[in-house]
Amino acid sequence: MDPIEFEGNNRMWSGGFYSQLVGIGGILLTTLILISTGYFNAFGAPLPTSYWPHLGLFYKNKGKKKRPVRVYMDGCFDLMHYGHANALRQAKSAGDELVVGVVSDEQIVANKGPPVLSMEERLILVKGLKWVDEVIPDAPYEISEDFMNKLFNKYNIDYIIHGDDPCLLPDGTDAYASAKKVGRYKQIKRTEGVSSTDIVGRILSSMKKGDGNNNKNEDKNHAENSGSFKTNMSDFLPTSHRIMQFSNGKGPLPNSRVVYIDGAFDLFHAGHVEILRSAKKLGDFLLVGVHDDQVLSERRGRRTILHLHERSLSVLACRYVDEVIIGAPWEVSKDMIATFNISVVVHGTVSENSSEAQTDPYVIPKSMGIFQTIKSPRNTTTLSVSKRIIDNLEAYKRRNLKKKASEDRYYSEKTFVADD
Image (cartoon, rainbow, N blue to C red; front, side, top):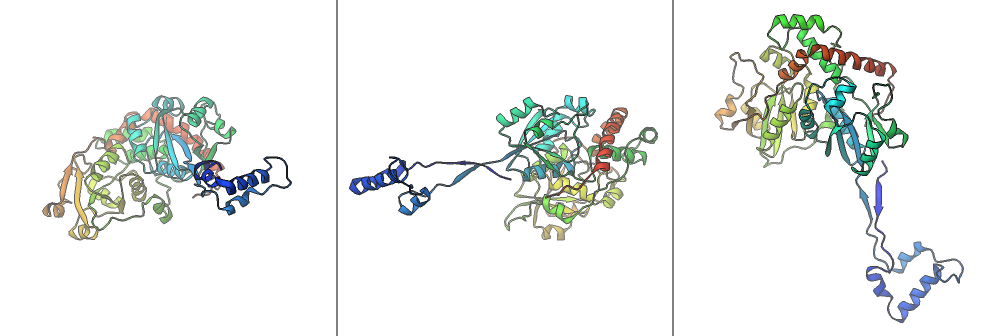
């Protein structure tokens, strides 16, 4: 991208240059320069200004000062997932500073249907992403001309970013038409294999199979009423390149205080962000263990909504996280503590583990005196988020039907868009 540049202009009479033009020799030389530049309009071809530095009279140019390129991307960011994170990562790569607009609850209801997460929760999630520099709450769903000018003039935005999937208003018009018209719009590649619509479908699908809810009568009712939801499992194809894009690429220093915390981190929510922030405050390097699907199914008696690599990417995207163990063991062993030079193992007070008796996974760190329980800042859990959808089934059923139509149209017309 071409940066927007501002260059300081050092005039020939400023600073120490003038002091070099004193005396008779200086006067003669000054006259020569003025004549050569056509100042007296008396002589022929002027002495090219490109030759002036060779006279040894000018201070070296201080160089060009670049103003950071600021880009804007907005979204609902409801049921935050790695697709949202990857979109914002790509947006950040299109500039130097990323400003993110979080669409208001009212605008989401008017254009898509009821949000699952509150504005407060969605702001915590967006602010918790490592690529985000600034957040604008209650952003409009449509980039109107008035709001676009506000972005340009108040927030110094240079470009407005959106994915290659369509974003249409209720009347069928393009929400980004104004930005495209003035040439300040840039497009990024949509992340395949996940969407909020898809996740809602997965939640309902898990209810059909009796996962995550102990009331079998409710399971049956939800199963009978959720047939129109998209219920296929993840289409995400994990690659090493994607993991590298999300990774910090740095390990702890020899004397770093490494903090370890583990969990499922399914349906990555505000409670996850807050507990990770609390854990990071206890040391210099936060190492997060993400348990694999089979272990969680066996230990908790239910399947995860998102699979291991999807959950790992969501954790890696969090600004408080330095490294992730993908498929971390359930029990923290002495060898693991030594391998990663772990100083403290922490666990929150809010847990989604089964209440049935099971082996304490933290026996070793407790025996070593390096285990610490920290108070969970929020009571939010994956099940409590899922329950919001279950309790408002019809509303989300209508929302998904509307969104599914546009997603089907996108996939039927999809063409290749290069990734970074």
